[in-house]
Image (cartoon, rainbow, N blue to C red; front, side, top):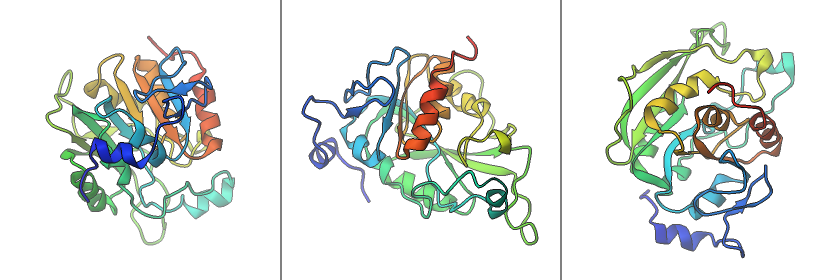
Length: 261
């Protein structure tokens, strides 16, 4: 599958009558093709299927993609679901779909951090490569506390994979980061989304790959952790999430004050 040209993107989805691409869930104002709305912190939150929004974003308008897409993991551990009954499976998690990566909204020299799993790694690597990304690193996140899986037949899972790719040459900022990151996962009792990532982990990706005021895209925003991290670090963001229950959580998290300056 080849990357979509800007002409093909435009022909697939027309802009709204007012020239916008969507409405921001937070400020209720129109979102421009550059991802701007009326939110003073620059964090745009859109309730939609990302495949309906990404074709409308201006080509080359985004500095960085940081996302945790449905990556074919199917469902959280049955054992944890029986205990909490809090989470149903997220939409689209039954298979690997890299269609979103083919829309050319990322700038030349921009980077993408994409979470995946060890058993879907090759599918994600091929999908992102086919979309035009040059895969530069495979980052291992050591979650410190292991998960469950099948406790009788599997080694206890304690890591996740993040593929780091770029369009063109992406120069990392600051000292060279290492490709193994040890960061404690979110405590099960604090989860607001079944695959929620810790803020401290996302800071580790934002700092070497974006400047202040950079525009970060998360097409699968979940409970808004990418947006929350961007707000804390002075970045702007476009967050797209298909499930309203999680958009509501993201909106509440974004209204909190900046955690540090």
